[in-house]
Length: 173
Image (cartoon, rainbow, N blue to C red):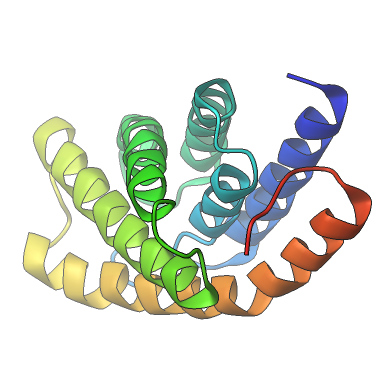
């Protein structure tokens, strides 16, 4: 892993941490997880297992530390780690197709929904949920998927342009 990659991933995680911290919890302590967008962007830019491992662990720990969900520490760690590798798997399958803004947006929506299911499932198993699973899913996970998808659709072309000009990573259209 080279220094450019580490710095780039650190910047994405830092931006994600700032967004995760300032977005307030709005439904039973849950909030849209903007950190996922940055984790997904890091995986898209640097789709190697060691980078995904690093992103999953670091993003999980930072999400766990900044969570507003009661008892959400361990579910955040479990969620980000598993979601990172599932997202990589989806990305590798999709890479066989043309990677476009549409596919990146679709991956983000699917990844956010996967993350929400893993988070709610692990929270249910470990600490219980402050409300019904379906209610939390509909009130938080689905809106988060929409927000994360829109955010990715806006920032991906910008970041892709910067990355291509600076040669930090190889991003294919």
